[in-house]
Length: 187
Image (cartoon, rainbow, N blue to C red; front, side):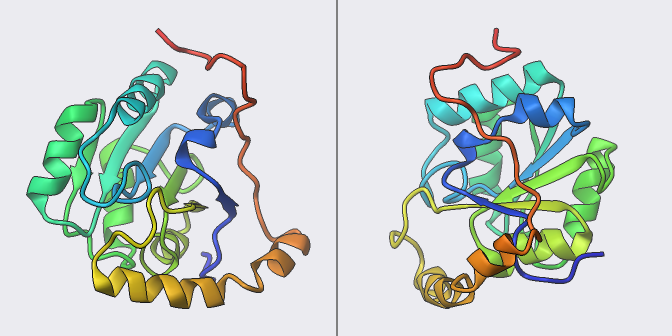
């Protein structure tokens, strides 16, 4: 089981990840954080998120939204993107609800990937659960609740040595979408 706080990979955006290539590697389940991972903090599901979830569905993925937010926020997002279930008030970084998400998807740590934007909740929780973790840059930084903004400063300090960690081969890179190439499995 992984215990470090660094992600297996750190990419610019959720929307850069090549989920078709990951499916070919055997991945069947995706657990997503919502705010600043898929849309700006508090924003409704947008067209890009809806298209992503349709693509994931077409690829055969099972998806769970895992959020520390309250149910109305997570439920309304889930209803708009379809093709997902959700767990709210997840108490991340506790690994408990990551494991429940995998049970709900009938997946394991070997075929599940987690995508989120924060080290101390999202990534640390996924790592504690043994799930491959991908950290993305926040969709819209600094337009968040004050406690999240304060954590962002600490996260920035923690990430300073990440390039050395990455250089030592400790990361498991995710495939990225090649620009100007159509997504496999699109309707």
